[in-house]
Amino acid sequence: MRSQFGESVGALLDRRPDAVAVTADLLHATGLAGLRDRHADRLINVGIAEQNLTGVAAGLAACGKLPVVCGYAAFLTLRAVEQAKVDCAYNEFKVILAGLASGLSYGVGGPTHQTFEDVAIMRAIPNTIVVAPSDPVELDHALQAAAEHPAATPVYLRLGRGPEHVLDRPGAPFAIGRAARLAEGRDVCIVAHGAMVLEALLAADLLRAEGIAAEVLNMHTVKPIDRGAILAAAAQVRAMVVVEEHSTVGGLGSAVLEVLEGGHAFPVVRIGIEDAYPPIGPTPELREALGLSGPRIAGRIRGLLTKAAG
Image 1 (cartoon, rainbow, N blue to C red):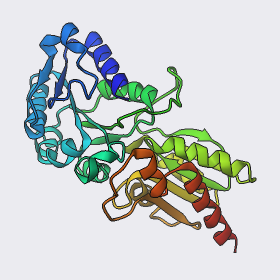
Image 2: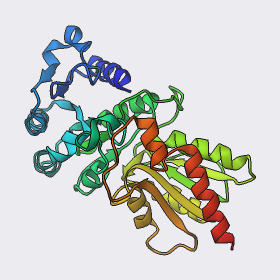
Image 3: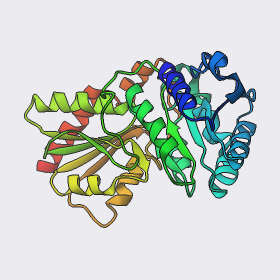
């Protein structure tokens, strides 16, 4: 994901003379180090100062530039939230805010570097788009779509740290605000984004072998969310499960329930990080321990459908 981010930002700077990459002393961690030879005049390192980082980006946008802000999600969305809100969103500046190492992808960094609040924070800011790509290919699509989006609004890209499995084709369709249906099924709909899309697909495969048909929606855009896709799934399934590598408070699950607030006649379960600090450890082990692996998700769905049938 990091190497793809560097390549995608480099390609954007190649295409757009107005594009500028701004980072907080993370040239190597964000894959941007290779741009020093190609675009030294449009690669700005402000040091470890995320608030200044976001403010500088807003200033660049005010001067007609397209800034791509590159930082760790934990610091970009918590430490610099005021600048994202006031300097960027309130002033209607087009700024791409790329938060890397989100969720549990930096699990060994502990609570200071794990990021499970960012979606809730960023989607609560008016005039802000929130996108969580599932793999490096979708990251490239999302960055291009963010750069081309006509609205004068910041776009928060929630990115992992790697390595990620590649699910998408380079030519796969992508549109901000439009979910991708990756599997069909009328028993249960699994809604996921980011790294959890792969786990949702693994869970669907396990369930399919047992005769349970699971629809999988890649809800890469949390805001604006694809209401039509959610309501269409709700009209035909017996249950809905939202899987997110984020707190169950205020994230994708909350956004889905907001769409369904008019009423629904089936159970909706949110699988994510409960209202507590996760432990410290390698990412795969943390996901398994917290119920965010394909087999654990399949087990929750199996129990949910059994309970609903009874």
